[in-house]
Length: 167
Image: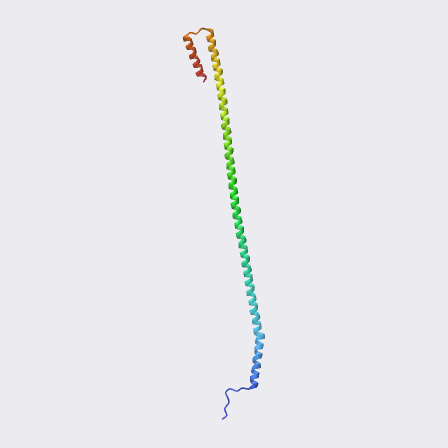
């Protein structure tokens, strides 16, 4: 009996299979791996692009945030300066008004004191004039008659009465 070997190597079959394998690898590489690699490369480039854009957007957002914070800080400083300026101006105006009021009060007081002094002088002059008149009347009466003690007392009483009425 003739036995057939289980594994036989046929050189032409092996060469044909090897050439078939190489052709398949070439075709797979050309028509399958190349498009897949191109798709993967495009995806990688798109992912890289998105990452770059995200970084740029983040940097821009950080820049805008710092500008915003700087603007807010400047606005707060400006507001504080305006409030401080308004307070100083209000305080200065209040001080000015108080000084004006004090000056007016001092002027009114000085005018009142001057008016009082003038009225006092006027009253003293009137009293002097009246006393002078009374003295003249008394002197006239003394000259007209000789005065005894009773008449003298009577003239003094009349003088005191007239002075009391005048004041």
